[in-house]
Image 1: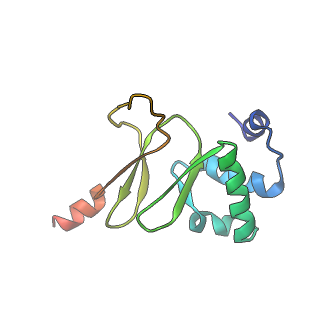
Image 2: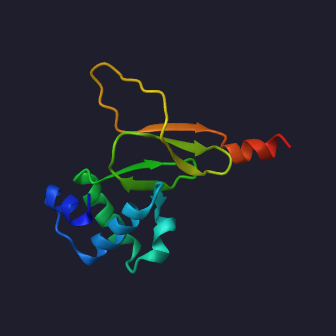
Image 3: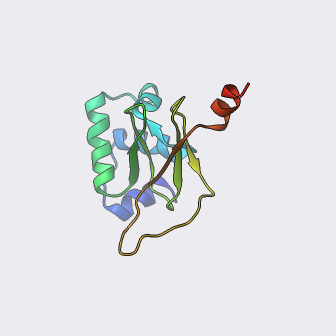
Length: 125
């Protein structure tokens, strides 16, 4: 789905700032925080977060907070888990995760915390 279709489906007005943020998120293969995005956009932090809030209200993006107290964002897609390394704070999408459900609950995010393969290998050497 392209950017125009996504926004049209949600009745969100496309501004240059919104286009910039969404294009970066669409092209990313992992969740991004403000620090990952700030050098790629020409807007102040307040404008960035004002638009992010709008996207969250319209269910265009998902977000979660990591161990490093940074908020990470991604375009809302099919439900999948995120792995957060407790040592290096690396955030990655987990494609294959055990499916589970909770009766009468709606699951928005699945966050798995632990030690990533790189940190685990470094600690065992």
